[in-house]
Image (cartoon, rainbow, N blue to C red; front, side, top):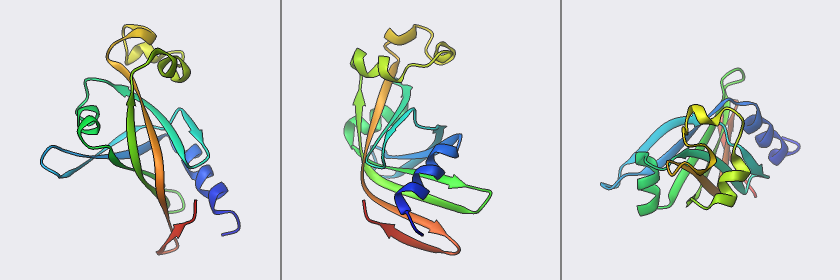
Length: 138
């Protein structure tokens, strides 16, 4: 792979969903599909929006360890990012991610208390393609 960071970034940007994992109160992983990230600063910082009242947000408040997975079904390849999550509830972060139509999820708009931002900070990355996985240097 010539440019691993560019290849991985393209996979992330072209998917409509990503999978996010949290650790529940009993120490078990929970994975769910989410809409793709709103903002990404390279591979190191990834921002997603979600409901403050969600189980995953409560899990992240207790244990910041997380994992994001992006799957390119067409070419059967994917990338797993391990890292930590910060739950951001400040108005500046919420404004930064807000998009037209988000009232479908957050009836109260940008100031809805049930709207928050998840900031994922990558610690490590692993790429899968052609029946093998490789660690990616960040």
